[in-house]
Image (cartoon, rainbow, N blue to C red):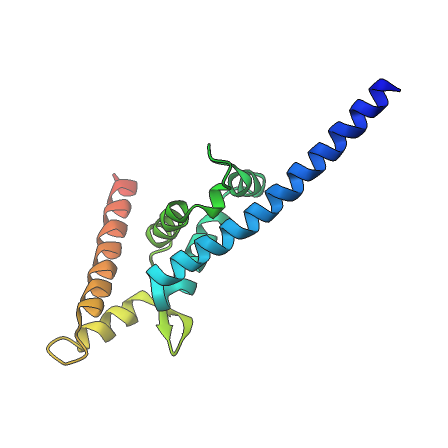
Length: 155
């Protein structure tokens, strides 16, 4: 009887922790999303897609392990803004032949070379802003990184 009561108490305690953890996960996920929406602005969906694309490149069993991993503060790794930013960066570096381009609040996939050409056509016009220049430099950096990777593979 004592063992039964102890097990019953333990099971209830475990259920309460799981419920608390689920609620905390949802709250932290929303906080992370809000923070990244503010930081990334109209590029939020694009960066979110790049992060997801990076994760999808992992073996299936490792995807769940990585996204379910917890940090020392019990936060899910997937709810950490810095980790999300890193995944988006890795996705951009690994799959840099394509770039996500915001268009009218939506994100569409467009060939990087076509986007680079479009941006270059804006040079010396009012369309050439610091943001456009930053995107252009990012594309040039992606091309440089790909060329270096290709040279290493040949060597």
